[in-house]
Image 1: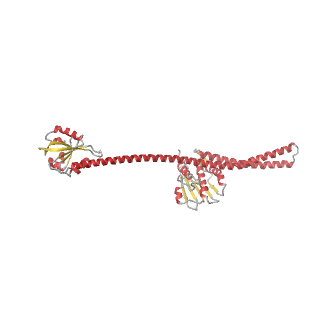
Image 2: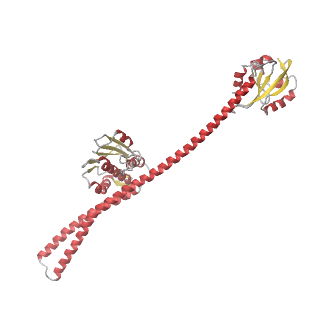
Image 3: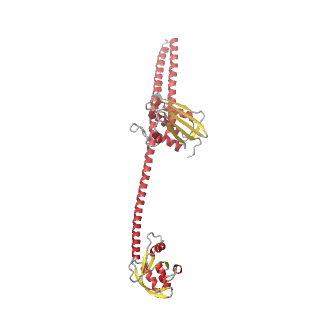
Length: 420
């Protein structure tokens, strides 16, 4: 690289120039030097300079060492052989040349002064080299500053992303617990009615039993009293049993769904039976409205998967329809169709609500996106659904909707779940 630079710029002067290695070997000559020593480049390059000196060969290494350790051009008088026969005494100057990019070793520049030469190309070249060296150091400094800035900025962004993911994870867990809390509240309220009827029935049964006992103890009991007591006991027992059975069903469905939603355990379960339990646990929320939820699912689908994920997905979809889809509707309809095809479970969820715009469809699974900002919407419900389907169950979900025509979600989940 340095030799090419020398050959390019040394042609501009009529002053003989020679490029040397630090130990005195000739690396390159300019045309003026070739003419001066009357030898071609091929004959000279690679040979030591001392072979072209008539005297002071033993002092040359000392001169070269001094020149290599100095930043200034060192003057020296040498007897140079022309065509290796004629000796010519010349006033020379030896200067150190250091590449700006450190890609080559430093070299020495030997310049033969001529009388009355007015231009000093070497000084110009040296000045240009110094300018280039300064620019190189400035660019290197700017590069180092930019590298440090990018490194610091990358670390800050990485930390921000990490913190955002932690916050998102916490909020998603809070969203799950909020849904579970709402489920607890609704089921507790729903259980109050059958339990209350059961308590009232048992109290009534106790009262008629005491009255019957008194009649029996006084020997005042008639056949009609016995018939009345037996009929009343039968009716009251039937009412108590039916209401306690309803409370038991609610508690059973709630217990299983609540445990599954709060844990991440994998187990085997019947899909239709489990989803019916989920819908039963959501009944308190739906029964306040005229909306209907229809489940069409084969009886024989057995899964070895995460029931809590299915519970959370179905809960969030129905809650989303109730809050957003049926906002201006008194009697909405939700239909859930499930089938298996090619070792995949396909779940089609549809509602006939208000639907979504194209822009809303693009953002529906984004975290913190909600059309109910400031009205209780967290914007995490559908993001939780997306994460559970894609990351937990290794499936896919597609949304299709238009304004006024409801929304549909096609969920595809592999029946053979990977072991994680």
